[in-house]
Length: 239
Image 1 (cartoon, helix red, strand yellow):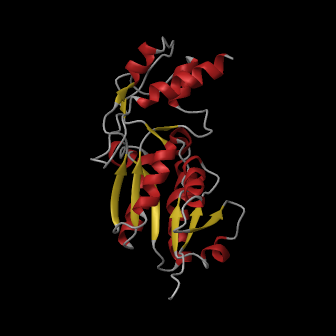
Image 2 (cartoon, rainbow, N blue to C red):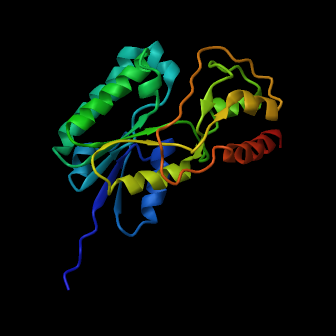
Image 3 (cartoon, rainbow, N blue to C red):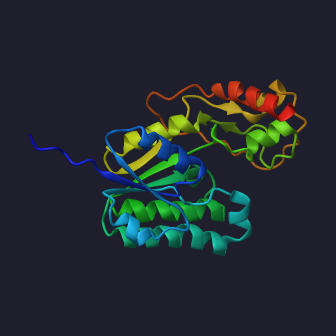
């Protein structure tokens, strides 16, 4: 019997919020071998051993992107173009953001949409993600709300919150799917005003409605699971 070779999956951005969760998922998946790639590594050398590549290295900070669009262009569009050059035709899966359809009036949205187009033109896969919870991250809109800090979007903003560990499972699932654009999120959405009222947050909201809801996502969980997570986080913050 001929033994089937297990494909090698390189994750660029292996230390990031989503990238680290994908690595944990791949480590427990016997169908793939994991190659971790972080900023200090030699990408050229490591991707040479890869059969497929996941690009999870685009920065997520919207304020920094819009404050310094030239640097953001370098860290997103130029980086993605360089990765495509280095992998030389190997299958690529890019982690993107739902902001590509909700914030095209910003440098953050435009730069990430440019990355999507570069990958799709090369018959790659793009997964748009929205707000997530879980992992080790403590600096985001949800934690700002729990701490009563100012939030720079409208309180009417609705997010299809999902656990980042579930997102990682879906990303690995898409590895065996056809090229194209995918969106991942909950099967419903929670407004920030509902979270504010439930947790009696003193946060002051200002800015545009940043609602981010994905297209239909198979087997998606309930966004209300974010309440359970937030209760635990608030308890930890007070302890």
